[in-house]
Length: 145
Image (cartoon, rainbow, N blue to C red; front, side, top):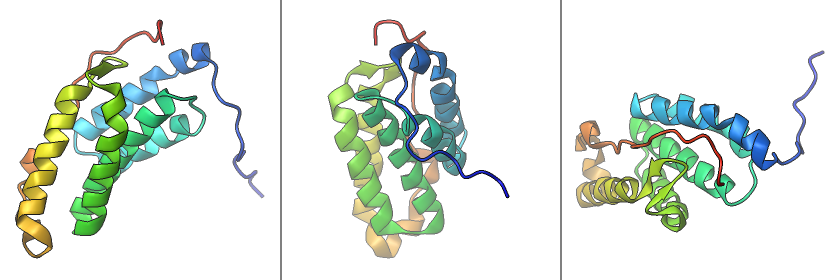
């Protein structure tokens, strides 16, 4: 029988988080490449052991990725809810955090949400997925967190 994953894993120290930032950037690349589910999964393991405030930023990216999984599934209400939750969390990190251009991310989330809301649930499938936000970033080494 395989061992169950440890539920209450210890929170990472700043040094440990720094050493795992590659996972965060990999999740951003996956998102930008259209692999929303994979992005969510990549970041989930890191998010669960990350201390505040970075934990909240990672959760915002997870929610953003999940929003576009909902788009692919045609789930309008879930998409809107997750876009709103992601944007709400990201606001405290603007204009930039961990090398991510949070201000442009918020603008693109707002634009996508507005387009989706204008279409509404009945015309939701007409939305052009070319308008999915891109997450602009330059990796940082984690010092100064």
